[in-house]
Image: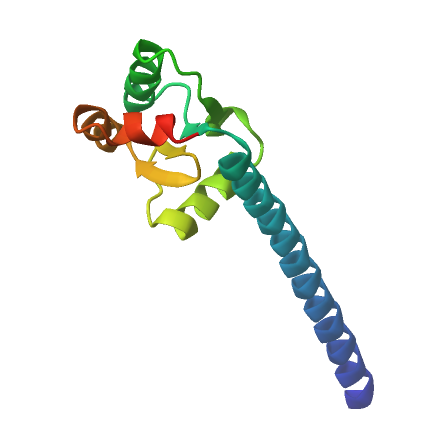
Length: 131
Protein backbone atom coordinates (compact mmCIF):
# COMPACT_ATOMS: atom_id res chain seq x y z
CA UNK A 1 0.00 0.00 0.00
CA UNK A 2 2.78 2.47 0.93
CA UNK A 3 4.68 1.46 -2.19
CA UNK A 4 1.61 2.13 -4.34
CA UNK A 5 1.10 5.57 -2.75
CA UNK A 6 4.71 6.49 -3.43
CA UNK A 7 4.36 5.38 -7.04
CA UNK A 8 1.23 7.51 -7.48
CA UNK A 9 2.94 10.52 -5.88
CA UNK A 10 5.96 10.06 -8.12
CA UNK A 11 3.76 9.90 -11.20
CA UNK A 12 1.83 12.99 -10.12
CA UNK A 13 5.11 14.81 -9.52
CA UNK A 14 6.36 13.86 -12.97
CA UNK A 15 3.13 15.08 -14.57
CA UNK A 16 3.38 18.34 -12.66
CA UNK A 17 6.99 18.85 -13.81
CA UNK A 18 5.97 18.22 -17.43
CA UNK A 19 3.11 20.72 -17.15
CA UNK A 20 5.41 23.38 -15.69
CA UNK A 21 8.06 22.81 -18.38
CA UNK A 22 5.43 22.89 -21.14
CA UNK A 23 4.01 26.14 -19.84
CA UNK A 24 7.48 27.70 -19.55
CA UNK A 25 8.27 26.73 -23.15
CA UNK A 26 4.99 28.21 -24.37
CA UNK A 27 5.70 31.49 -22.53
CA UNK A 28 9.25 31.60 -23.88
CA UNK A 29 7.96 31.11 -27.42
CA UNK A 30 5.39 33.90 -26.95
CA UNK A 31 8.05 36.23 -25.57
CA UNK A 32 10.43 35.39 -28.41
CA UNK A 33 7.77 36.12 -31.01
CA UNK A 34 6.82 39.39 -29.28
CA UNK A 35 10.50 40.32 -29.08
CA UNK A 36 11.02 39.49 -32.74
CA UNK A 37 7.98 41.58 -33.65
CA UNK A 38 9.26 44.59 -31.67
CA UNK A 39 12.76 44.38 -33.13
CA UNK A 40 11.39 43.99 -36.65
CA UNK A 41 9.01 46.93 -36.21
CA UNK A 42 11.74 49.21 -34.86
CA UNK A 43 14.31 48.43 -37.52
CA UNK A 44 11.98 48.07 -40.52
CA UNK A 45 10.17 51.39 -40.17
CA UNK A 46 11.34 54.98 -40.21
CA UNK A 47 9.02 55.85 -37.30
CA UNK A 48 7.42 53.39 -34.89
CA UNK A 49 5.06 54.26 -32.08
CA UNK A 50 3.89 51.73 -29.53
CA UNK A 51 0.56 53.14 -28.44
CA UNK A 52 -2.84 52.48 -26.94
CA UNK A 53 -5.82 53.72 -28.91
CA UNK A 54 -7.48 55.48 -25.96
CA UNK A 55 -4.36 57.10 -24.47
CA UNK A 56 -4.35 60.93 -24.55
CA UNK A 57 -0.53 61.03 -24.56
CA UNK A 58 -0.49 58.71 -27.57
CA UNK A 59 -3.04 60.94 -29.31
CA UNK A 60 -0.78 63.91 -28.63
CA UNK A 61 2.22 62.09 -30.14
CA UNK A 62 0.17 61.14 -33.21
CA UNK A 63 -0.89 64.78 -33.57
CA UNK A 64 2.75 65.90 -33.44
CA UNK A 65 3.62 63.56 -36.30
CA UNK A 66 0.55 64.67 -38.27
CA UNK A 67 1.65 68.31 -37.92
CA UNK A 68 5.06 67.29 -39.30
CA UNK A 69 3.38 65.39 -42.18
CA UNK A 70 4.99 62.17 -40.97
CA UNK A 71 3.16 58.86 -40.80
CA UNK A 72 4.48 56.58 -38.06
CA UNK A 73 3.91 52.86 -38.01
CA UNK A 74 1.61 52.67 -34.99
CA UNK A 75 1.25 49.50 -32.93
CA UNK A 76 -1.94 49.78 -30.88
CA UNK A 77 -1.17 47.47 -27.97
CA UNK A 78 -4.73 47.43 -26.65
CA UNK A 79 -6.00 46.12 -29.99
CA UNK A 80 -3.59 43.17 -30.18
CA UNK A 81 -3.78 39.80 -28.47
CA UNK A 82 -0.06 39.99 -27.75
CA UNK A 83 -0.11 43.63 -26.63
CA UNK A 84 0.81 42.84 -23.02
CA UNK A 85 3.77 40.72 -24.12
CA UNK A 86 4.93 43.48 -26.46
CA UNK A 87 4.69 45.98 -23.62
CA UNK A 88 6.93 43.78 -21.45
CA UNK A 89 9.44 43.50 -24.30
CA UNK A 90 9.49 47.31 -24.51
CA UNK A 91 10.03 47.46 -20.74
CA UNK A 92 13.05 45.17 -21.12
CA UNK A 93 14.30 47.19 -24.08
CA UNK A 94 13.99 50.77 -22.82
CA UNK A 95 13.16 50.47 -19.12
CA UNK A 96 9.68 51.92 -19.54
CA UNK A 97 6.31 50.28 -19.75
CA UNK A 98 4.31 53.43 -20.45
CA UNK A 99 2.92 54.48 -23.82
CA UNK A 100 3.59 55.98 -26.18
CA UNK A 101 7.11 54.80 -26.86
CA UNK A 102 8.50 56.28 -30.06
CA UNK A 103 11.45 55.13 -32.16
CA UNK A 104 12.87 57.02 -35.15
CA UNK A 105 15.35 55.28 -37.44
CA UNK A 106 15.92 52.66 -34.75
CA UNK A 107 16.66 55.24 -32.05
CA UNK A 108 14.47 55.42 -28.96
CA UNK A 109 12.98 58.91 -28.57
CA UNK A 110 10.76 58.19 -25.57
CA UNK A 111 7.24 59.18 -24.71
CA UNK A 112 5.01 62.10 -25.60
CA UNK A 113 6.93 64.73 -23.60
CA UNK A 114 10.25 63.42 -24.96
CA UNK A 115 8.87 63.61 -28.50
CA UNK A 116 7.69 67.17 -27.94
CA UNK A 117 11.11 68.13 -26.55
CA UNK A 118 12.82 66.49 -29.55
CA UNK A 119 10.68 68.59 -31.91
CA UNK A 120 11.42 71.82 -30.04
CA UNK A 121 15.19 71.27 -29.83
CA UNK A 122 15.51 70.03 -33.42
CA UNK A 123 16.60 66.48 -32.56
CA UNK A 124 13.58 64.87 -34.23
CA UNK A 125 14.01 66.82 -37.45
CA UNK A 126 17.68 65.81 -37.59
CA UNK A 127 16.79 62.15 -37.11
CA UNK A 128 14.09 62.32 -39.76
CA UNK A 129 16.43 64.03 -42.22
CA UNK A 130 19.06 61.33 -41.69
CA UNK A 131 16.89 58.65 -43.32
